[in-house]
Image 1 (cartoon, rainbow, N blue to C red):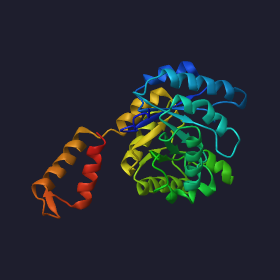
Image 2 (cartoon, rainbow, N blue to C red; image 1 turned 90 degrees about the vertical axis):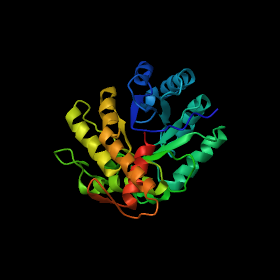
Image 3 (cartoon, rainbow, N blue to C red; image 1 turned 45 degrees about the horizontal axis):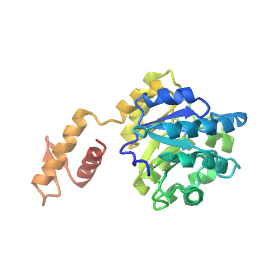
Image 4 (tube, rainbow, N blue to C red; image 1 turned 180 degrees about the vertical axis):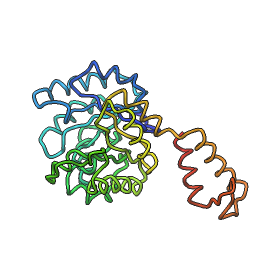
Length: 286
């Protein structure tokens, strides 16, 4: 039986795959999804044990919270072992690192089908190699499994030899602003959720709040988290405010009452088709 498709992904909390005691606690964090990590947070020597721990947790846990597994990259020799270990326990989906467009989606889809999984979801981390950036437009139509597109600001600078992806104030340097923007556009073109990357300063709650709010402003619908304390801050940023919901309903109601109108005035301001589309999209997130 397939896991339900998540209705929203405001917050996706990483949990190291070799820390089973954290997995149970993470279920109570308020996150919309957990990402049980078999990649970067687990040393090579610990991966076998982590696979067993993740599979055991998946077998026992319910799916009130969506449960994804981040496997190792497809070309590194570990992905197949990861999939062998966890797919029988039916995770909600797979988070794919080092994804490079439609070819990576097709490759992972094939490997999942070979293991009897025909409907598990895929969330690609889509900017971790230079080649990947040029393939962000390929996710549209690539697979029915695609649930969103997210990005990362750590592997890419390492791959191209940059010293850092960030200015001293934490904002991104121009190459990584481009990667972020193209992720947003690629997800929108594919009509799936754009997911903002992590905020690594886990104790900087004020900075996280500002970062998440900028993400929501720009069109991201959720964000990955590194620590449970980040989850409520992220959820707040990506949950429409009461005022925003009331305004969206007023826009929808105004056009419903005037079905032949292309332009209306609401609260002294002009509204037209794009305002209606934005209002309808906001209300679908509730």
